Length: 121
Image (tube, rainbow, N blue to C red):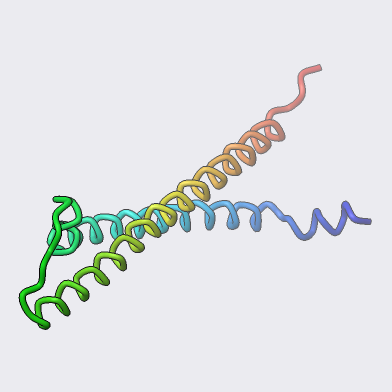
């Protein structure tokens, strides 16, 4: 009974569609992660707070406006750091989905070839 239900639930067309969806989602996540990573890296290079932090220098604000600008720059740096980290996680998840989809594709293709070749007697 369970075998019949599972056989009807997991038809070859559904399994192939699921595997291709995994591969496609993985590729999209990798592309989005790479774009966000490069975007954050480029914006970090021009961020004042990031430049001060990399130079290991201290910044002394001459006026209230300059201090508010440094605070805003630091908040933007933290947001860009978070985007940078999240883009790496996104790309890693995409690679994992791509790998699972690829393994599933190889498994299904191997089973298809095994079923297509007649058994030698």
